[in-house]
Image 1 (cartoon, rainbow, N blue to C red):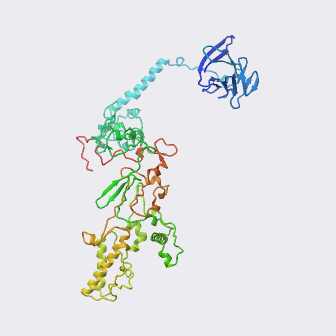
Image 2: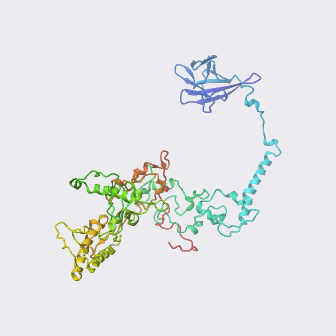
Image 3: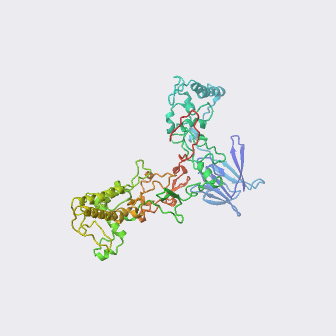
Length: 602
């Protein structure tokens, strides 16, 4: 619909001036008000921003007041009425009247201000003044030339002289003439980053030539060993210069501005990486939508050092082989379900795992004075708070399990060294050999509950033994049986993988070394300190894990409960650089060292 709006202004001579405007509308509504988005703009303060609307129907034209606005039709206040060309419409101080149909418009509307503003308005109280450049002391042209010369001298000429007269005396110690000192700071576009603060006022360190952008060669003396995040010689990406530092890094952006955080720098290549190069990487463009499942590095062969990187949730996900037997579920038990069981026969029907959980609760009350164990009793953060320290027997397990290292009840203060199987064998052999040489009983079978025997096996003869070869042989036999008991399920074998002498190449008891994974995601980074307001079990399902072969790393869905893509509003915006490092130390150098650069031994 085309609407012609004719603004009328009556002059003192009685002549009426007209200003026409044609507006094309998509709908059938014409808005009237002081708002600039109104179809008919009425600029007087006595008109509301959205005052009224004209609606064109098949049966006629209807005017409606908006909100509490006041309309008058033929001097009668109304909220809604059908109007014709004979109707006199009053909108505040304005009078509107529909015109006759015209060839170039579907509707014609005449608007006239009939009630001028009162004489005591702010517009009338303030005396209008006109300030012209041509009426002052300086004419426009003279003032323009003066400002131009000031800018040229202070912003170009003096900084160039200051730059030319600077004597470079080393990083941060550039010497300038006293009068010109500071003039070249007119060219300083912003604060240096924290890593480059040591350069101080030595602009020559990066800006080698005047009016020439910083070249990558200027970065090489300090960053010659900085490595790129992919093999430059192997991959060629269009419109990307892998050795151009300034393509991604912009200085003078503040303390951390030199580190780019834009997700597009990564997503431009990695969003469709499979079409550009053959790699083992998946396409990724945004953490909240286009990102593969986490692929932790799992130790599958601790003896050979073999690791395997597999996505979580994959069919046939490998078990982590750490040579350690451990149940998180038992150690995180919070309730003992056999507290009321007193009958021995009933106790035999209780699962072993339940009994062990009750033992954990009892031990926590005795040794730690707390109701049960929690994750922080064994898993402690490193000093920086980013990663977690690996649990150690001496610092964590020994708080409750130190009594397990005692091997003979007759000598409770004599304990076995942990982590040194050869010393364990020597200690046990020496202990029982010393008893035999002292003429004391090597062992009293019936009175020594620490010595176990297999079902159906005859017990050794009780009684004292004297010296000589028979005592030595008996001591060796008792020590051998004690070693079988210690390295079996009663002590070492409870937590460790054991190799008996028959299967050992050395012909002796062996304990396979524990191989714990320090980082499941070595190619990413995660800050535990930033998540200290959360519970460990919110992400790691340890309370249901009954074997150390479980990989308790949370899947990507757990992280997405709080973290989404770069443009997320209802969650934490997460870009690529939040979890990934651009320059990796295990790839080729980004730039070749210059000929005069010293060799850096890594």
